[in-house]
Every structure is written in C-alpha cells, then in structure tokens.
Image (cartoon, rainbow, N blue to C red; front, side, top):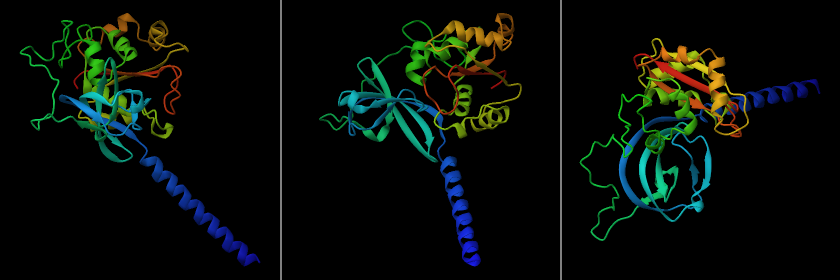
Length: 282
C-alpha cells in the first residue's frame, strides 16, 4: 500500500509539472503586439465572414462586436502588422459610412470590376499626402501642436485621450516608433504580459529600433471613473511631477502615450493608468 501511494504521488507530481508547463507555454504565446502600420490602396471589399471579430484599433486591444454590425460591403484602407499567439498576421482597417473598425485581412475580399481590376477608391491628387484638409499634417517630424489628430486617429488608431496627453507636452513630436514601444508594453489582453518596467521599455525600444538612451517614462494614474476626464488626467500627470514648466523641457523630443479608459475591464493596466514615453533621439 505504501508503494502504491508513492507511485500515486509521483504521478500527481509529474501531472502537475506537465500542467504547469502547459500553462507556461500557453501564456508565453498569448502575447499580442503591434509590429508596424502600412498604407494600402483604398479598395471596396466584400465581407466573407460576418462572425469575424472587429477591433477598435490596430493593436487589437478592444473588441467592437462582429462584422454583423456592419454592411456586407466596406472600404479597406489601412493595415496593421501584428504578432498574435506567436504568429504574424495582418489586420485591415475598414470604413463603413462614418464607422470604422479593424478585422483580419482574410475576411475582406477586394471587389473586382468587369475588367478584372480591383476597384480603388483612392482619389487622384497632386497635393502633399501628409497635409490634410485641416491644413495640419501627419508627416514625420510634426510637432503635437500641428499634428492632425483626427487624421492620425484614422491612420494609426491614436485616440482622443492619447492625443490630449501628448499635446500637454508642447513642442514634442509624435513618433510612431515610440508609440509602438508604448503600445507593446501596454498589453491589455493578459496581465502576465503587461510590463511597462524600465527593462521592458529598453527591450521593446530595441525591437522597434528606437534609441533608448535618455528615454523618460512617466507613469500616472488618473483618479476618475469618467470617460475623457481630461482634468483628472492633467492633474495626475502634474502630481507625478510634470507641471507646465517641467513639460516644457521636453521641447523637440519624440513622444508616445497610452492611457486606460475607465470601464475597459483590461487584464493588464488598470482604469486611469497612463504611460508617456519621451525620447531625445529616437
């Protein structure tokens, strides 16, 4: 009987080790991060899977229902290259009237005309494509005061909170690579993958080719349960030691930011948490 108990205990230990290994491997592959964005030709497309999950941004942070909430034909116009569950993938941003979303590119089939060519909705223009109708710009090197945040939201998924935070740092320059570093550290899908530590930021900077020498990371938590509570956000940043005078010292630096809106139910950052990255020479 004693020998049987020992055998049973040994099997239990082995099973526990295998279970632990399985969980560890599963967690290791659960990470989802944005690699880079890409401009694609505007094209009308047919939805091939109405049950496909739709996301609010190219970082695949928040779900926005399924393609049943949109028409059977949409316009695809931007791409996000991501790594999801250990595999690379491409998601397309689409437009349905005034609404937009992100879905796996394989669920959108470009509509082919009678001539055999795909139908493009990209208008011909001789104007600088980086200068928008508002007279502002989304060109690299543009300061936050002159950035067209509406256009950038459509192109790169930067939301109103992120735009507000970055504009508090007058004279700084929005940098997509720096934003990608912040985004990669800001994993909301799994608390085990949320890591905005200095070491993680250094590693993520290397991944995106950002010079992390002199990088400044500002972490804050806004005390609010309201959406778009800019007063609470500003107060939290100042409480972290960055009033208008301190923020002015970063003129000319590159910037990126993340913020967790209250009520998002993320498994990583908590409601009101924010991260600002400032890099002198990205």
